[in-house]
Image 1 (tube, rainbow over the protein chains, first blue to last red):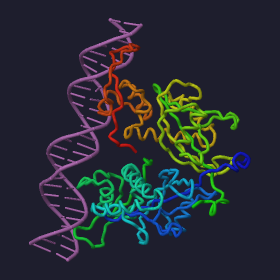
Image 2 (cartoon, rainbow over the protein chains, first blue to last red):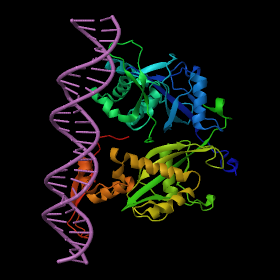
Image 3 (cartoon, chains in turn blue, red, purple, green):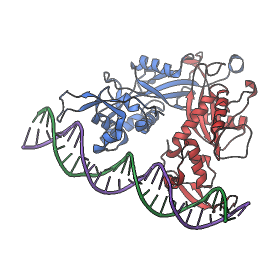
Image 4 (spheres, chains in turn orange, blue, brown, green):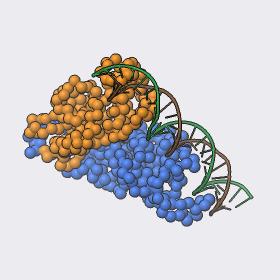
Amino acid sequence: MSLKNDLELYQHPYVTVDGVLLRTRDSHLEVKLIQPSKLNGQWSLPGGFVFIDKLAIDTLREKMSEKANVSGFYAEQLQTYDALARDERGRIITIAYLCLTNDFSDFDGWFSIISNEDLAREDMAVKLDDLAFDHGQIIRDAKERLTNKLWYSDLPKYLLPEAFRMSDAQKLFEMLEGSNYQNNFRRLIGNRLVEVGRDDSGLRKGPKARLYSWAISDKREK
Amino acid sequence: MSLKNDLELYQHPYVTVDGVLLRTRDSHLEVKLIQPSKLNGQWSLPGGFVFIDKLAIDTLREKMSEKANVSGFYAEQLQTYDALARDERGRIITIAYLCLTNDFSDFDGWFSIISNEDLAREDMAVKLDDLAFDHGQIIRDAKERLTNKLWYSDLPKYLLPEAFRMSDAQKLFEMLEGSNYQNNFRRLIGNRLVEVGRDDSGLRKGPKARLYSWAISDKREK
DNA sequence: AGAATAGTGTCTTTGAGACAGTATCTC
DNA sequence: GAGATACTGTCTCAAAGACACTATTCT
């Protein structure tokens, strides 16, 4: 049983994957972009054509490693984009993935797309619209999805370091939601964190902070 | 600029759309299935290959109308499924859509997939696994998505009739969530409903019920 | 000392859940 | 009248939000 007979001559769309790889630091959300030579240096999301014999997610990891030199990140499907004119080379649909990392060893091609300062946010809003294809919108959708799932998923786990201070987690939530939990955050995050040590770095004023890890999920995912 | 040069000989996946069309009545959730001749009478979701020059959503509506004779439903993208062996004819990925209707003029091919009676649910759990391809799982995912978004979206609007009694809405929520809001539902649904009349049908015991419509969304969608 | 950060405790308000109780309709 | 449905009101408990206050560390 094969498609050869029915469909060999049938024109069908090309399929790509694109990854929105995000990381957070202090009050910044950053996205990894690349500058493919075939796009005249225009910045775009890393990705590529789906291999006929590989899962989209596996293709994604391969392309992300090859073109953006990133690996080991968390990934989940975001949405499929199929506007007719989204790629001028032809009918190319893309399965977009929301990807998260806490790796800060790399600095090339990372762009801040949100910050506490409104000015900085305005700046990048323009930049997003300058990206290739519909990649700006995909990034906006990724940020929205991340924000919506913050409290109801394990997503924060993949953005935070292995051990982090309570205030690190609070800053992450407050940045993405634009909220201010003051002294109530500890109570709200409840038992999602487990204490794993103490911060002896001595880099800050104030008392030594406790360090936490994200607790094992009770599978409230999705 | 065309793909002819780079990719003409490049083997790429086929792309289909599939629609999970749901409707609710009393304490039942029903899904529309078809029996394509090429699948030896196996029940499956309506859908088909994405036209090269049409949006996936437009292809979906066309195929749903042609193969299942349904139209005018609400639709939103669910998820894209791309397991290598999901279709034995070759690499075929499918963009699945969650579709909702309140039309009860048709009865062919509608299957109950949930009910208050546990027995009925068991029955259909088996049936779902007998469907073509991964369509059983897609339906499960659609139901889960619907349930998760009940309170945070306008989805109930597309399942309820134009004017409905408070208890109709309550039954819908309670069926999908397996919950029991007793006399508190009116308060919980809050200002999401607007009163539009009175039920003068006189088909039931008890006082005449007020009729409601779903209020205009404050765009909490997604 | 002064400033920044970490952490506790408490007061108020809001909302969820449980449920008693009343009114109205059909049969 | 019986039984079902519609609707209101109230009590309790838990969580959210605001915020005062203390403690610890660095400069």
